[in-house]
Length: 175
Image (cartoon, rainbow, N blue to C red; front, side):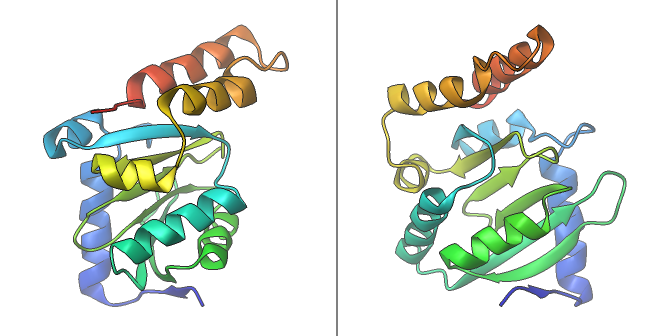
């Protein structure tokens, strides 16, 4: 069961975390990824059942039974939650934060899953092995999925298509 965290230490940590990781547009700072020598992968839309199950498996491999989710509304105080490391809890958190930016991590900050406020994409960030185990496809397949689902959709105007190409170029880091 997802529980909001009310202790002042975790609330303070979540504010600091958001200040370090999110820029003024509530996108991930590339410099944080670079400083940690992390890879990241943008994936179209919100996390689906398969992605949530893969994340659950990756978290189990890291011996994590729960993690912290942060709901980060624009110009609002971030709200931290304790989330069991299960597929259904991951999907529940995404559903409950569908109107805001959300971040999933742990206090050790050993991984990060980011979802943008408009639910257009999410990012899996962390050490190479973590990212590859959380989205178990090749670089080529990941790119095909991203561009087939969003970036080349004829329902989008040129500015939106350009936006998705920029997201892919900015956040796709493979070591």
